[in-house]
Length: 112
Length: 113
Image (tube, rainbow over all chains, first blue to last red; front, side, top):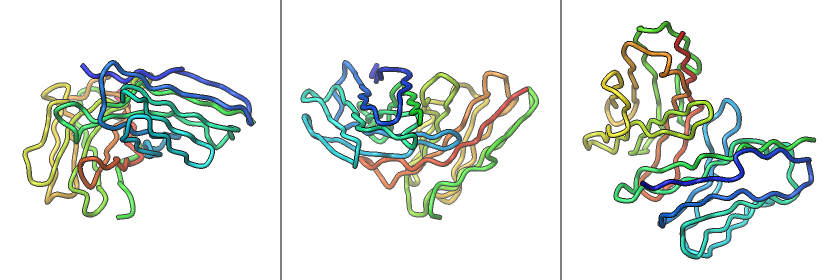
């Protein structure tokens, strides 16, 4: 069974701090996606990483895909209250690549 | 439309009643998904529609759950004889195809009392 474990589960930080969220699996994924979900809304796609070792930057957010394509990380620099939300990683299910498996999620709260 | 639209946004129902949840995907998106998100749990896959193919129902938790997609567009998820454990946020998403990300609706929060 493919599982995506995220850590930490909860994170509360002050505005301006840096943080890293991790997404790990024992399975290889052809790609991984990161979503952010705000209260009362559906998840919104942030990025897709497809190549082992790939690094993508989206303003203050840096996403990395592990060399072995089993893990990914999201680093946020100088966090802002607007970054608050549930961060989810997701990857295509083996043998059914048009269905995504979602990670367990990291709930981030950035205090002003 | 511009985004995925779900209705109602909130639904409170009595145990044993049937409910229908509606999803209007992005125009032209051939793939449509239903997921369930319970408090403290991740997103649980329910059902997947792709074009005119038979739906993938492998995630439906019981035969009380069913879904249809009419004309390759609007989808309805029906839960019969609702139980308290059905309380969750039901999310619909659409996609333009394999390898593309999902666009989610805002969800329907279902509470069974």
